[in-house]
Length: 258
Length: 79
Image (cartoon, rainbow over all chains, first blue to last red; front, side, top):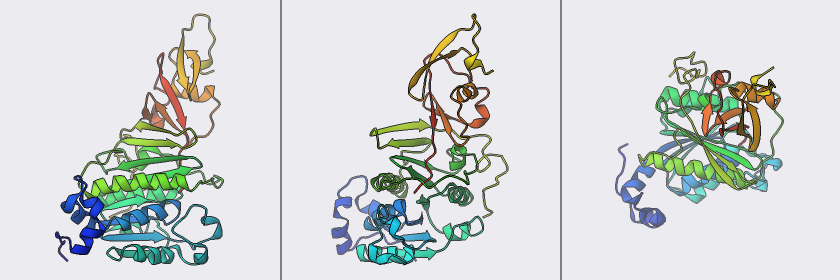
């Protein structure tokens, strides 16, 4: 179906506060409506990014999560309610997001993202918003982003701390350039204060919007490090790692075949 | 013994800021020496040197200079 460039009257009302932004205006809102994004996970990060991307009018949102809602999720995963306990997170999210904005076409997929299925899951999307809770899946998503040549917006949290960076395949450092080591299999569960994934996912969404608008995101080759305890934001400059297994001339061990 | 902790009378000392604290170390010390100095055993940590990320392959060869800032950073993998 051809992209529609003109907004209707209801869309002009709904997105009024975006349309008066010179960075967006009607042409930018059309790009948002014609965008397709992939959100990996509907937990602490994905609760926020799915809400904001739906609210701002992204046309197609593919959401993947493997879990059901648990009581211990509810201190931070604000997509889900007490009455959702036991429900698939994809189902819970679909209910809330449809209520929020029926203009967005939702594609909830209940399942696990693996090296074997990631290309099929992500194909057709313009960018990947990371909302996972582990390094293994992030490496898999990073590989898919490289294989499909689409941007990957990383966000991670730990207690009061968070990190955000945006990777553009072959042009910038990638996830594995920064985190080359294999994940620690014995890492204990981490503490999470809800506002921290809220902050990190919000920053990821701002980066995503810039990509959709064909603007350069701000965190290319930069790792934003957030310390909510001391209220400091620091930036670490990144360069591509010539030895990177994923994006350089190394073994490409984590890049699935396209 | 790593260069950072060698104590010869002739060795020149420099000051660096390591994880926010001033440390006096031997001139010519590498990132690997600083990791040994702090007895840092977590290989998942990433290292920032003067605001730039250093890949692990450079830890043994990257030397620090007087006034440099080095930070060991814990990756955030939760979500």
